Structures are given as structure tokens and as C-alpha cells.
Image (cartoon, rainbow over all chains, first blue to last red; front, top):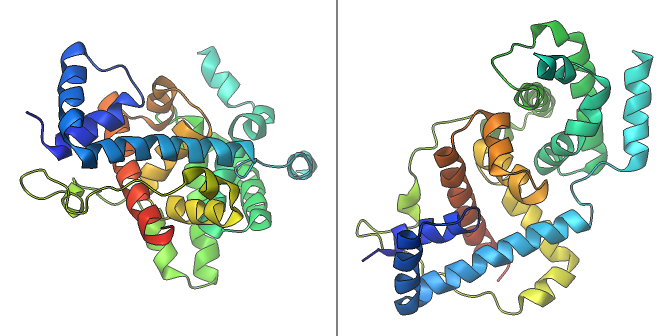
Length: 77
Length: 188
């Protein structure tokens, strides 16, 4: 049986890659019995959602004006 | 190798790496105009130092290295020592003991945030989220930004940051644990 440290690692890993059948099953079994890790798994989706929304709001992108300004500066060099 | 000559085509640096450098700088300086200036300074310095680019690193890692130097210079001028230490890659160790007991159970049990939909609509939340991101360890920020904000594949992340797949998921997991903890403290 997995402990929470191991289960949370697998839950995080499952966000980025497909787990093997065995790992997936072990994780499912743990989550069935563990409220904390189920909450953590839901938080992982929350974090992904928060990131996606920051991205959609262009919080982390250069504006077109900034790009133009930088391009000009680079060309002047 | 043709890939190398593409890498050294300075015209593409802004397009290919500008947003990444900007997001990294923004998390450290917390002001978008200053962050834009940092990107510009970084690219200008990179052009001058083009010949020092070594094939051992990728162009992105190299540019991030230059950006970090620029940030350290800036913070030194402002004497912000604490931020400087955030930029230096320390040994990040296992450091999961702040989250789990020796028997592998949670020290602070994760809870569900009330009403996440409402959080997303509030401007304040985006600020707190950025603050929490900027508190991550250097390697964690790089990987988290690349993956979740800039949508890079694990394969590209490994290539760009010279990491193996295990490093990537370990860094992602630590980043997520830290973000979860930080949001719990500062948001709810």
C-alpha cells in the first residue's frame, strides 16, 4: 500500500505522463481511501487551471509594443 | 549541425525565448516594464557575447544564465540581498520533509480551496499566484513556467534545461507542493 508521500508523487506525475497500469491502480486504491490525497489531486488541477488562466490573460507574455521596442534596440546595435 | 546555426540566429531569439525570459524576469522584479528592460538588456548582452556560447548548453539555458546575471546586478544596485540568494541554484535536496512525516503521511493535510471559480475571477488571486510562483526555487520556477505557462513538452524541457525525465517530474512535484502550501497560506 502506498503512503501519502508516494501517492502524491504519483498523482503529480500523472498530470504529465501516463502512469503504468500498476502504478495507476495503486494510486486509485490509495485515493479511494484517502481524503487528503484526493484533495491534493484536486489542487493539482486547480494549479493547472490557474496557470492556464494566467497565460490566457497574457500575464507572462511580452506585449507587441515591447517586442517592437526590443527589436528596434537590437537592430540599432 | 544545422540546429546550432539556427540557435545562433539572433533574429529568432526574441521570438523563441522572449516570453520565457520575460516571465522569469517578471517573477523576480515584479514590474512588467522593468522585466521588459531586463529582456532587452539580456538579448543585447547575448549578442555581444555570442562567441562565448558553448555547445554544452542550450541557447535558452545560456540566455537564462545571462538574465540571472543581469538580475543579480540590478538587485545588488538596489541592495536586495534576499532576492540574490533566490537566483543562485542551491542544492535543492529532497526537502519533502517539510510536507511529510517520516512515515510518509501529510504534516498539513491538504484541503480543498473554497470556490476556486471565484478565486480565478479576482485580480488579487492572480497577484498571489504570481507571488507564490516567484517564491519557488530557481530550477522549479524554470520547469514550472516552461511546462504550465509556456506549454512545453517534457521532452523539450529535458532538452532545453539539460534534465532527465526523472528530474523534471521531481521538480514539478516539489513546485506543486510549494505552490499549494503558499496559496493555502496567502489565499485562504
